[in-house]
Amino acid sequence: MRLHDTAIHTALAALLVASSALASPAAVAEVIDPGVRQAGTDNGPPPPLAGLTADEVAFFQDGLARFSAVKMVRSPTGDNSGLGPRFNSNACASCHIQPFVGGSSPFVNPLPAVAHADGATNAVPWFIVTNGPIREARFVSDGGVHDLFVVTNRSDAAGCQIAQPSFAPAGNGFTGQGGNPNIVYRIPTPLLGAGLIEAIPDSAILANARADAFTKRLFGVSGHPNRSGNDGTITRFGWKAQNKSLLLFSAEAYNVEMGISNLIFPQERDETPACQGLGNLTPNDTSTFGALTPPNSAVLSDMEGFVDFMRMLGPPVPAQPTVSTQHGAAVFRAVGCGLCHTPVLATGPAIADGDEDTPSLALSNQPARLFSDLLVHHMGAALVDGITQGSAGPDEFRTAPLWGVGQRVFFLHDGRTSNLIHAIRLHASPGSEATLVALTFFSLSAQDQQDLIYFLRSL
Image 1 (cartoon, rainbow, N blue to C red):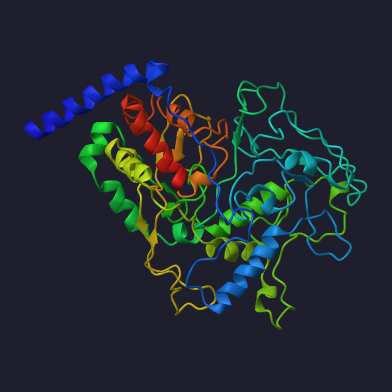
Image 2 (spheres, helix red, strand yellow; image 1 turned 90 degrees about the vertical axis):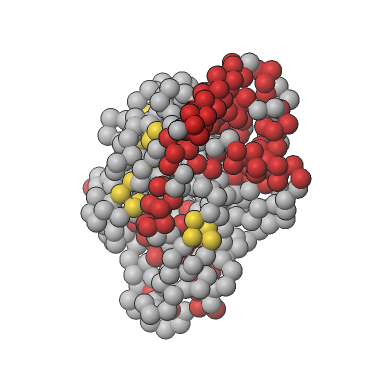
């Protein structure tokens, strides 16, 4: 009981001191976010997982080519067709590109150019600005994505005349705040190391959720897995961990973000008759059964190729440690960040594509240094978006994996900030499980805070 009482008193004292520090700008006056960490691999080819077989590398490269391809409504050759009639962008890699293909939103937003590609006359929504993040829009009324653009007046979409949704009234274009209260935004999640995340067994996630139960209770941290409504297994992809697998994630994104129907989402989202007679069969993306000669990857649909790319994409590579970042890692642990941002989870035996008897050595029994528990947590009034997905409620979000955060430009689900210190501050609000941890961070000395920020930017 004495240990229990001491721990409670320590936590309460930290809360009181931290509350005072949070209210005082002087507490963080010397602390800066140094910004995006540059690395020699920036803008280069995305790295595959170490240890892939030659066949796996071939399928990875095929998937990369598909992931990078720019889609049209109807191309002269028939390849890369099916865009729209409503869409957010015209290539997977246009959104997942920082610091290279497979990453997240880049420094310069490509969507203003996409809006007018091939003669389109789309208005660029107010929350899409050149120096801001790529965003998709969800209407709180139905929780669904309402695509930003239409194919109207494109040179490859003759006869299709449909209107964009209204996103008025406008707010701050960079932060996305202060506009229509019935619209919320999501930015692209990084895909690096996604195959490792997929290969983590449910049992590992649940065991980690049970670990450090006493300390988690002291800090007000709970969290729970989001689960599939079909088989009850843990879902783990997306801002609310709403998607079960990379295949489902791939198919949904192809349909929702580019308007390309496929084998899992076979219907067009907009079936306006004049927009259906554009020469494309439905679903737009299918397996190519006639392609039975090498390369075997030619048989795959695009969505399957995307999965091969994402599943075999290597994880982020952290910077070499320094005295400062090593101290920052210790501070990260001491203040409780790791209670949700779990440094490592282990994968199980992962099956190689196309061979049910052979585990993939590159994915099996590997450490995934993701800095996430893959649970969803209440993030409070400051971050609530009003959307429920599965068992993730209006203010609940998946613990964002921090691997690669050093090379990310925008933070939080809606990309409202590029500053890690501001992102941490927004973790502290009424109803947030992260409040005590965030307040404890702001109660630290300026040097401790700075080293923790340097540590995050080293990831």
